[in-house]
Length: 281
Image (cartoon, rainbow, N blue to C red; front, side, top):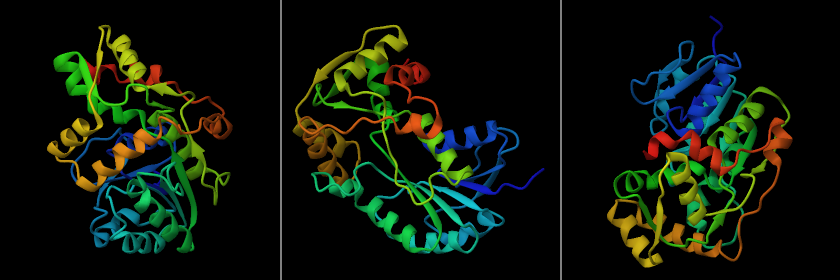
């Protein structure tokens, strides 16, 4: 079997998992970094390692040429050592960043670590691409338990509209960045194909599962307290809510970069909901 030249860090997440799946489907040998025992399709090489312990990465990086990097922490602490470890083996990093990088807006705390990771990678001497997607459609999986148990979603800002992006589209762009030179040194902003309000997102999830789902509006303060009670870090909660409120008047842009880069239009939220209907049933 040909030894993999691409390592996917974050291979058990939605985007990283989709990158592994698409590379494997295209016949590209791929290695998946995991912290525990995880099953992957036959032919995908799973190797243990932990981004919080750079010394654990050497075996995973041996023989690797390119790395797809998802940073799972809310600060860049520890990132220099990880990037140094990558640089000893690989020549290219494709980093999953954020559309919010560079914005002087509420919610900067959400993207501060992305800004620092981009800076560290660019200064490393590695070839690089920084993908900057808008909000992930998969974040709405946070509503799944409510939908299953109550048939309703209790959330603020029903009219908040975002161009949520399907993880498969992020992965398709990542595959181009990993397997071609077309995106070297680029920071593509990639979006879903249209703005969809949260109210409409809930309705589309209902259509996908074959039963109505209600949107029950709560205040921002109620939402903040709920997130804190659920164990989300305070700094994240206090950044997310003002940033989302700001988007009511200044929505994220919509573009056709997914189609330009991959040749296939970005998938609408309706399609994402159908793809993930089982999670909400």
